[in-house]
Figure 1 (cartoon, rainbow, N blue to C red):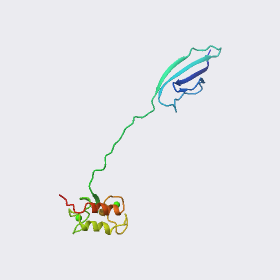
Figure 2: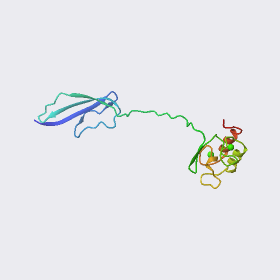
Figure 3: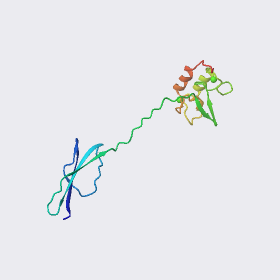
Figure 4: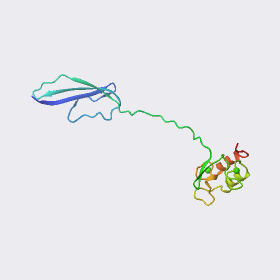
Length: 154
Ligand SMILES: [Ca+2]
Ligand SMILES: [Ca+2]
């Protein structure tokens, strides 16, 4: 006899294709995840109709979800200068010899203030004075130095 046509019908509680004639491989793309019933039957060339078969498929296209939580950066003032990373107290940017000296005093605040308004690449820019590492030396850096004024490295 030979199969004349195959019809199918995909549905679930919220989705229903209605009966469609099968003409090409079937892809369940664009459907939301869930369980679907696929009903199908064929007719042959002399008009016999097969009883309806049902297949159940469960569609799960949702990748697993991973939640990543990153805490606040926990670091003290680290600056890369001429191949050395200077780790010092926040606000302690310099000292009498030009290196952080373990205390935040007028010298530090003044050093930041002298570079005030400079930015990466500017002649007055010194990455040590850019305390918040945002590429420019502004009120925030002066403020951070000023807030730490008087602190002495234990
Ligand atoms: Ca200092
Ligand atoms: Ca800054």
